[in-house]
Image 1 (cartoon, rainbow, N blue to C red):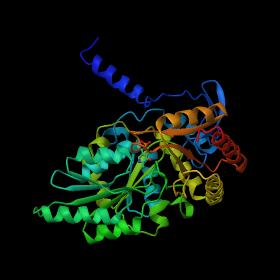
Image 2: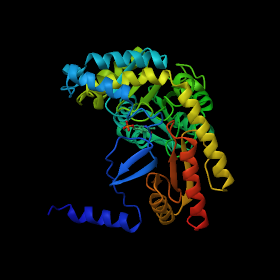
Image 3: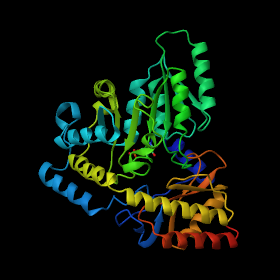
Image 4: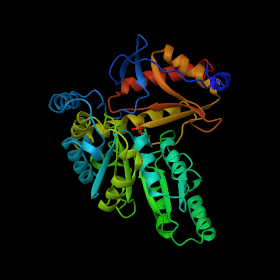
Length: 397
Ligand SMILES: *Cc1c(COP(=O)(O)O)cnc(C)c1O
């Protein structure tokens, strides 16, 4: 018994009563389209392994070889003795891939975002974030202690209004403005209007940071992501974040930008400094992944075909689908209870699809979040569509 027990119990009971208690499944196979979970096999539509690289033999070989050569653990933080050759090489290759001067590698995207936003903004500054930004970006903004403002989703006009208001109210000469947005929004699958957002940033002398976790590897020529796809320059997007847990199929993240930015973060970003480096073998596998990603335009073309097919067929079923051309395809259900019934039905039919509820998404927007991968074939999608159709007939949808 601790003095906190009754509080913990009350909060869990509330969650349960609201139909919002989450449970973890136990995966006993590698990530992929066909997975073993809790002793059954399923077709999965809920991983972020967009190119099917998480279980790719080339990545596994690279990781295994690096484990033999360099051991398992990083052993120390980067600034002590944890910065291995594999990290250094990966950073150089990422800088080249993103067309930026330097890159800095982190053990996770959550940590990278916390580190970068909090290190860039201080108490006198303003941080402006899209309402639907990833939780790690929001948390970074709060940790920074800056004046924190969320603007309407993907709405450059709303951003502009807030920036203007900040300037009017703020007499301090040294107050800076940092604007932060996802490149592809993780729960809606829409792509940020980066042209307009970067133009507003230019007008108001604000710094733009883009987190392209779901864009890199998936969108654009050679998988260079949404920033490159929209032909934005390094000056328009001086701070670029990418993660390795999604299309790269490994783990970790990076920030890329000018030498000055990266030198500054290396010295001042606390979540970078006070943590053990990522295992060098993960960096080695990520280097292999980066090579594969650049050669995978055919896989991306296949994925786009699967996405377009799924969208068209969903619309034929008359479902409430969000406008998304990315691998993230949400079907809005609204009621949490209805979503649970639907997702249980799909599971019985052998499909795993993300059932996303508040507080991950706003109230009354509970949704089925289908994620597609280049490993999905047309027949996988057809099978899911057939079950959705059946769910419709049964009044579950
Ligand atoms: C997944 C995700 C992250 C977190 O990355 P991890 O490496 O999984 O911690 C950050 N930003 C966005 C937009 C994401 O989708």
